[in-house]
Amino acid sequence: MGQARADRALRRGGGDSAALDTAHAAMAAGCRFLIVRGLTVQGPESAIRPNIRLRRVGNCLNELDRFLSVLITECVRAAGLAPDGPADGADDFPRRLDTARRLRRIEAHCGYFSAATTRLRAIGRIREMACGDGLLRPGAWLERDMAVATAGAEFVPGQPTKAPEISDQALAAIAEFYVSIADRLHVFFAATAAEA
Image (cartoon, rainbow, N blue to C red; front, side, top):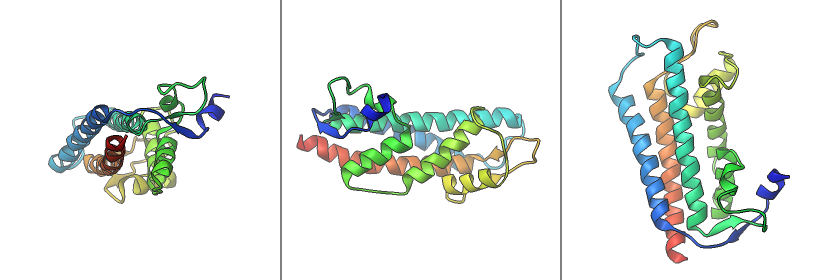
C-alpha cells in the first residue's frame, strides 16, 4: 500500500533553494574527498586487511548514496513537489523509494532521461556486497557491475575465497559520477526554485 502511494503523481508545493544549495555543497565535498584520495593513493593499501578495506568501500558508497538521497529530497522540495494524497507528507516521500528509482522519477519531472539509474543500481549491488548485505559472489556479475559503476576504472576481482579489492581510483570514478548527477540536478532545480 505504501509503495502505491509513493508511485502517485507529484504535485506542486513550496520550495527552498538554500537547503538545495547546502545539500549540493555537502554532496560535492564528499565526492571531492574521494576523488582527491583516488588521485593521491596509488595501489592497494596492504596494511589494511582486505575485508576491512571492502567494508570501508561499502561505507563510502553508503555515504555517496545518502548524499544523493538528501539532494534529491531537496530537489523535490525546491521545485515545490510533494507526493499526491492527503496521507502522504513531503518528508515521507523520500524514504519510500531506492535512490535509483527516485532519480529516475525526478529526472522524468525534468524531462530528462539518462542511463544513470542503471549505473546506480550496479553501484547499489556493489555497496550491498561490500557492506555484507549482499552475497559475496566474485565473478562475472561483480566484474560487470564494476565496469558499469566505474566506467572502466581499475578493479581487482580477487580469488574466490578472498574479498575483491576495489581501488581508490574506482571509488574516485564512482564519486565523479555522483558529482555529475548532483551538478545536473542542482542546476535544474536551483533555476526551478528561483522561478517559484
